[in-house]
Amino acid sequence: MADEGDQAVADPGQADALPGGVGHLYPLGSRINAAGRLEVGGCDVIELAREHGTPAYVYAEDDLRRRARATRAAFAERAADSEVLFASKSFPCTAALRIFAEEGLSVDVASGGELHLALRAGFDPERIYLHGNNKTACELEQAVAAGVGHVIVDSFDEIDRLGPIAAAAGRRQRVLLRVTPGIRPDTHHKIATGQEDSKFGLALAQLPAALDRATGAGLEVRGLHAHIGSQVFELDVYDTLGEVLAAAGEFPVVNMGGGFACAYTRDQRPPTAAEFAEKMVERLPAGVKVLCEPGRSLVANAGVTLYTVGTVKEIPGVRTYVAVDGGMADNIRPMLYDAVYEAEIADRFGDTTPCRLVGMHCESGDVLVKEAALAQPRVGDVVVMPATGAYGHAMASNYNAVPRPPVIFCRDGDARVVVRRETYDDLTARELD
Image (tube, rainbow, N blue to C red):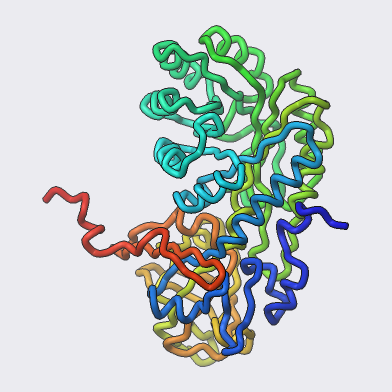
């Protein structure tokens, strides 16, 4: 029988619940209701669009919880001691962080702002890990004052900054040393981080000197941290990573990073949480506490983005452009990483009309889906883009002075706004003249 970790990516029967073999891209439990409309978390998305407007980020709350539980179970079954950290940069939202805290996850934060959110969400400071390749003195002081459990030290300069700050607070701060293991997975170059030529971490050859420097600064080195990149499908790289870190020395804690892939398109079938756990643990010595840092695998497929079609422009013999009321300000990933997504009309799943799904911002590059296929799109249609639960809200901007979208959590047919839509007044709230 498959364990709970095997259910972290796809739910049995989920692909059958939605037409076209796209079920695994959507939040668990999504379905087409009797009216022929998509439901997420039991909520009709067209009704959500009417009530809350578009663009809007919509999440199935139970899906967030289930993925968290599945990942914890996957590692707990394969390591005597393990800890799952939510990579908060993927979805820095207090409501989501609170859910993951309730589900027993720890959290990694990459800035003072993310630390503020994690504390506000109720995370025990001991279960917070502070990341960043250039932490400011203010952020380090904030972390030490809050009692953050571990700081992931990224450089010699940071050791020199953190040591005096911790000493002044009378605290022997625990740290993990981030190393670059010289491993580059098959992923986009902008989200590869494990190669030696990286802004992150210390080269393995520098590890002895870093240990001496950290110990001399009064820091308690608990172990190593390595992160090879994001959206990783190949499991063997974690096998190699385990070997590299095991050979680097004996430490009580090893953080294997994150990077667990999610499915953005119907042809993608990422490994399960159990399969990632198996490979991460396999080469590590017995008795080592194993940490991992999933982000997008917990939130990407738990969320969708809703848009409304405003223009359908047919250029005979060239292409059809379908323009929606959002775009690069609410999802920069297609422009930043060449990320590929799919989309559907919320009440007409199908792919009868080849088109290019574009945003409303003043950039020719504001293209959400280059090669989309929608069912006879027309003005007023609600378009749903799945697998947008990671990095959409996190990277949203006010380009063209557009207010950022709301975040809506759905559960058992009830919808609650956890982040309201910005207003025009919000755009000028910080201006002094």
